[in-house]
Image 1 (cartoon, rainbow, N blue to C red):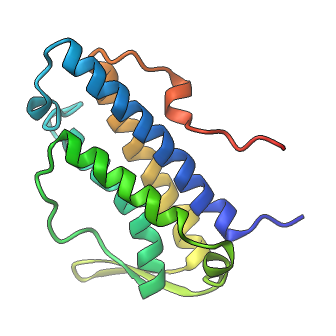
Image 2 (cartoon, helix red, strand yellow; image 1 turned 180 degrees about the horizontal axis):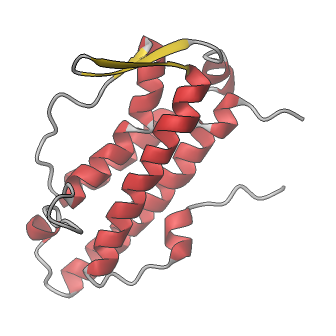
Length: 173
């Protein structure tokens, strides 16, 4: 049995967004219980030259729902400007991305197979097929940023484990 583009992309995006949503909830609970300033948390970086927590969460949405939207348009680019969202806004961003992805049908996404997609950053362009873009560019970026956000919460003492990151597994029924 062949695996569909929907299963390789949207289903994976939804699983990761579910994990992110869960660990953001745990992060809010932990920070509230321990008087950790959420406005400080959203600006926390793992290292000085890395982007802050809020960017990491915004990038998760951009490399999931935003990736599918880019494939639809045949063009994906970094966001022009990211709003300085607070913690609860980041939770809503993830929830909204999940909700929009859940509305996509497998037939709609599978129809993108072979479609040309350009990644463009300023004057730099990289040509992809839809499946090459989703699997070799957006999915790794999604996991990088989801992991970095997870790591920042762990660094702040949020009691998380691997299971929190993984989200809902797609078990055999």
